[in-house]
Image (tube, rainbow, N blue to C red; front, side, top):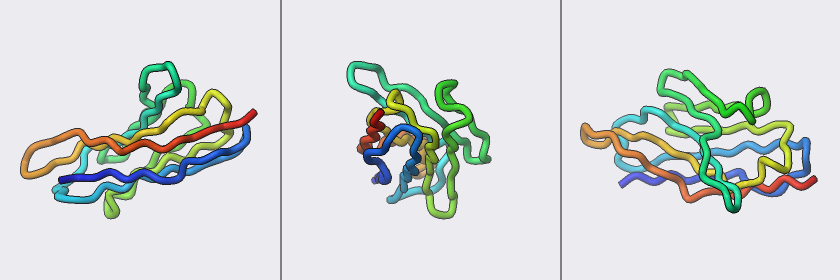
Length: 119
């Protein structure tokens, strides 16, 4: 069994910063892609940023230049540094990881962490 545990959400004023972390644990052989998604009330879940095992990244246009995704492969952890936050960034943020377990790849999700940006 694999678990993803997120931390770092909270309430911040517009223009502020937060850093999210997501640590994977369990029967992990390796982790391929990792990413962050978010879901605001009444909206669909959307990709925020993703990073491959080799460090290649991609971002949603709405966060380019403000958010940075990174990962520590030794710790099976992915991070999301969020700067210049806007009220529109308010959402529940979820991490996703594609984990190789006993020769097969599976998608796992974290439980979500709330980010609220006040104006």
